[in-house]
Image 1 (cartoon, helix red, strand yellow):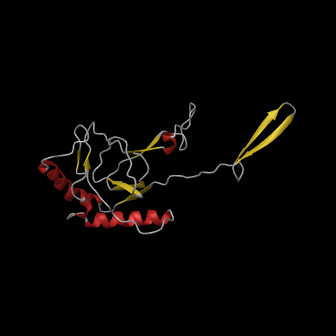
Image 2 (cartoon, helix red, strand yellow; image 1 turned 135 degrees about the vertical axis):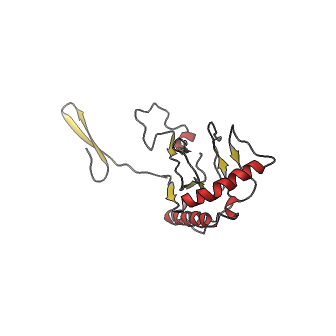
Image 3 (spheres, helix red, strand yellow; image 1 turned 180 degrees about the vertical axis):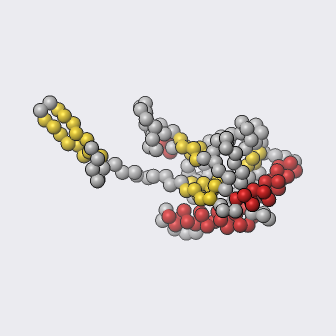
Length: 193
């Protein structure tokens, strides 16, 4: 049975009947935010050729997986020409997330890079500590792009240790956020992905 305050279950024990009231709370929930950039098509047309050219000209590319490319460790891509409006959009979105979660101080962009993920490209699981926020913006995402997989922090502690009868937001080992052109996903930097 459902009540306004939580879940209520009836348990029959022969002639006795006992009502068990269980309240459900989410403690330490992980907030993940999505925002959509309204100038994404225009940005895609102008910067995708520039990014492909940067990859082509890179004399010592960091290859983190087959067919993939990243500019990680090179320039702060959002501070280069052509990305000014996107940077403003991302800064505003992060500020709003920060405010929504009631955190103090004003976050600022520390670093940014681009990655090109082609077929069979993957990236080892990692996080971005000690930073507060991390994000992924999809300049171009095809229908079959696998998206961003976020790992359930409970799984890092091997919980639950029993078989699961049905996956939900509490016991799933991970959740994948769909990749969509123009989509920005912002998440806490401690979250493995």
